[in-house]
Amino acid sequence: MRPILFKIGEYPFHSYSVSMGLALLISILLIVRQAKREGYDPDRILEGCIIIAASGLLGARLVFAAQNLDYFSVNWPQIFTLKFGWFSAHGALFLSLLAGLLWCRRRKVINFLDLGDLMIPYYMVGYVIVRTLGCFLAGCCYGKVSDLPWAVVMVNVDSQPRHPVQLYAALGGIIIFIILKYYYRIRPFPGSNILLMFILYGILRFICEFFREADVEPPWLGLSLAQLVSLLMIVLSSSVFFAVLYNKRRSTAGRAKT
Image (cartoon, rainbow, N blue to C red; front, side, top):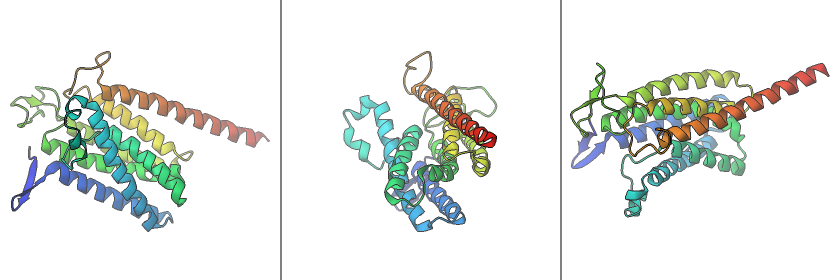
């Protein structure tokens, strides 16, 4: 593990904060490039990306604080510090989408659903970077004790080998990115890539939680809070996806008969 990548003088550059910066920079550059290819104003899209990214960071911190109320209820000013770590992927996803919706309605540069479909694969690029360069090197979000040959020791936790669950999540993120990039070209309706992302990420997070050391006691049926949220994401997103797809095909069939 390498929680501190390097120092400049006495100032340490932590792996998590460096990974977060790289994830945002690379993802935004890829989104702007893709938007330019499709004929959108790159300057406007860059503006939207910055607003959405800042909102995502805020949502990630607020949801993490809500999950750890015992600590933050007596240390609430630390919610607003720039401390590396202390983020929730679910919170980042939800608030960034809300910010994107509000920005699209105000600027009217691009339809929100089209923007979401365009951006969402690159969310996974940032996710993979943070899970590997950030979480894995920092030793946070660590896995359960394991005797598998690829188990690793998180030296900041203890001396026992554990599942490298951060790398499991990163591998899943790469697979999701490939699927979303391909599906974007054939998406049957605006917003379908967003819904597919919620479904696939929900499945990934639900599975990874079985290998991750729980922060608190599972609240229901041995499932963590993240798993319960993921199940809700999967069910709701799948329901909307197939309902819209069914209505679209039914409407197309009706017009064909007419």
